[in-house]
Amino acid sequence: MIPIHHIFIVVFIIGAIVLLYVSWHMKTQQNVQKDMLRISQVEDEATMEDPRPLLDPGIMFVETTDNMELKPLVMCSVESTARQNPDKSIYFFMKGFSGNLSQYPEPKYRRIHLLSSMKNVVLLPLKPTELFDDTSLKYWYQKVNPEKEVYWTHVFADGCRLALLWEYGGIYLDTDIISMRPMPFTNFTCPQHAEIVSNGAIGFTHRHHPVLWNCMEDFVANYIGNIWGHQGPELLTRVLKRWCQTNNLAPFIGKECNGISLWIKNRFYPIPYPSWEMYYTPWKKMDIERTFSATYGAHVWNYMNRE
View (cartoon, rainbow, N blue to C red):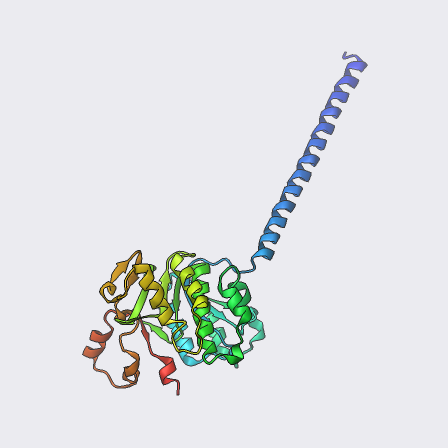
């Protein structure tokens, strides 16, 4: 028979082990909770410090007015790009969009709901103050007076596309480009003709490309908002000439210059803007195939034909 004091010793040892385990488990749980709290605080701080969304490179469109009743051409531009590029995210940034789709009821805002129903289309609010932060455009935006600007909507859009490409990378397209085939992700620009590189279609595979920073610096340093195109195509042309160390970009069209391709104009501008009316005239099938055989997206020159 086991002596009674041996039994008490065994019970005491077991009890001590249980107490030690419970104490250790509680401390471990407390440490885990503290770590989780720290992680949560870091995530909250990161969110508060940079409220801009985290996006993978995709294809971007911008609406810089407060208008939320989308025009048919804008709708067609975004939709055609989404359908031609089903494996890519299509981001539509709108200045008048709150981010809450329920605030835009049908049928008045039917087109917004149609776009949001497409699986690869993402609607996002355009917040210029946050977008321009940490760039030279921040101070320009703080000082500029839109009411005194002749081409404010267009100049504002010129700045937004540079900042968006700088922040996220990907492809920017004007909302009057109708996509005709899938677009490759690469660093590209596309001249309208031998002397001017348009900013209506631009691509950079990764964020923070130095050319984009140079463009934003030039945007502010040489700002002349009352000259049509000075902050857009002419700016991009100026910067690319410095990037390519040349006064003539024509020899680089169809080639690459320091990591940036200058695509042939037919990629996006198969019909030059003085001939925009050709889009609305009858075509023969043979002429369509010849004109658009190398086209990713047709720029239909909305500014010229808006009336």
